[in-house]
Amino acid sequence: MKAQTAFWPLLKNELALNRRGDATGTAFILLMLLIYWFGIGVFPLLALYGNDLARGRLDELFVLFDAGFLPIFAFVFLCVLTAGITYATVPSFLDRLPSGNSVGPGAFEFYFTCVMDRRILLRARTTALFIFILTPFLLNVGVSVFTPEISFGRASAELMQRQHPGTFPFIPHGAVAYTAWLAWSAMLAFLVLQTYGTWIARRVKPNDWRTAILPGVPILVLLVLMILGARGYLGARINVYENSFLFFSAHPLALVTALAALAAVVQIWCERRFSKLEIL
Image (cartoon, rainbow, N blue to C red; front, top):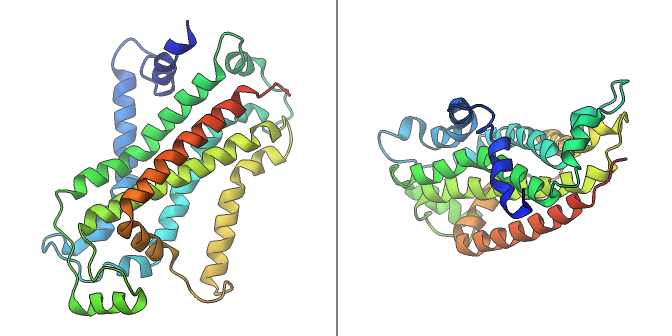
């Protein structure tokens, strides 16, 4: 099979769409996406509206940022994303864990066969992971177009002007801006972890205790920062999520364009590095 035509079969394989002759694989993927959306994707919309959904009004949007659940949501999401990125970027990761057994050659034969274009393989894996991880966020952006518009009470608008001079007294298309900001942030995290996973791939050795720790370093760092922030050890309290949302809502087109350019650069770099991996 030519490398130019191998992407789609590989993508179907990663999505489990061609492992059986019937539609079981497709149904399974759709079911998993539905469960994932209800578990993670739908949560931002429920948190955004809650009891205010019937009234179509939320006087205090920034209560969401002060409630403290966004860091927890981000931590859970990043744990899921880290597991997926590790699978995609570190070949045969589970076989390399310290278990007292030698690394199975079967997985390496598949990943490093001479007839397999490693760049196409990584592209198929990251595309499949992108579809699974980010589809719920993109669905939320589409759904938010039809949700009631967010409005602000006068006290909320005045408070935002005092805390963030120069920002809008209200957020135009607030629900869309909110869900688009979440999707943009998730995509940025995806690219950062993809870069990190590809960078550590050649440093993950078989039967080494560091094998299990290296992929989880970003999560451990985030956990430490969350604990230090909750205990007040990081100095003045800075609401990173609120500031990020306000900045995104003021410059959505520029940030989306920059993210698209970053995605292209990251993908090219990761594919080149992945193609040079050797069996250690």
